[in-house]
Amino acid sequence: MPSSSSEGAMTPPVADAVSGNWVDRFAPLRVRPYLRLARLDRPIGSWLLLLPCWWSTALAAIADDAPYPDPRLLVLFAIGAVAMRGAGCTWNDILDRKIDQQVARTRNRPVASGAVSVPAAFAFLVAQALIGLAVLLSLPHFAIITGLASLGVVAIYPLMKRVTSVPQLILGIAFSWGALMGWASVMRTITDPALLLFAGCVLWVFAYDTIYAHQDKEDDAIAGVRSTALLFGRGTALVVALCYTLVVVLFGIALLSVPSGPFAVMGLIGFALHLAGQVRRLDIDDGARCLAVFKSNRDAGLILFAGLALDTLVPNTLAPLLP
Image (cartoon, rainbow, N blue to C red; front, side, top):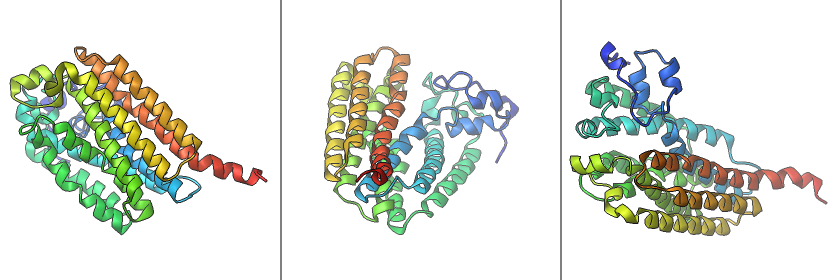
């Protein structure tokens, strides 16, 4: 790994990093800028990329009458999510380094601040992409083809804020691809339940990233960057509520089409209640509140995954006890 300058290594963490995170506490100074570049000090993005993969894997396990979601796939998707989220963030920071310098929340990002040079960032991008490729090649052939189809969307997303007011829609497509990957890995095809899950995930990402974008709306306007936060303004809560409602409806239809059992339904209900709570808590004029609401989507997603996983685990656990 190319080394950064000692001055760059001492660059303070970005504004939305968790105080006292493991990178700032334990990582050697030389590697901290790279860990920050991969967002390993802020794992929420990896969680949000991973959850659609896990949902899809669990939903496919229900459809396939499997005793549990494939643990090998769950682990592979976890590794792949961390690697590809890091690669995507590195690519984003290379392209956005000039814009990041104009935004208070992002001006300390490693490339924008000079802690990591552009050539070093490219080398780091390649290293992370190779890990992601190794994970992809460990999947069935149909899933490999499905995964490769996402690369174009991933590559163009960082540029979208320059040309459209809805870059969150492109992010939604990129971050929701896992809803197809889990199903493709288990079923070796893409059918209606996976497509319904994918459509719901796109709306979920669109909504939560709109919330996230409200942290930067003033700086974005100055820098000439577009976002749904600027587009929707005071109507954001209504748009988020509508998107979240459609997410629950689409997920519900996906569960019915499998069909799933009571634990999956309870997971969806818990997920829906969590989303409703986000809308109630949202204050677009409070950046810290927006960040907290955004981050809470990990918990919402884990509630849904727990319900889907229990739907396979519990019936198979109880089966030997039933007459």
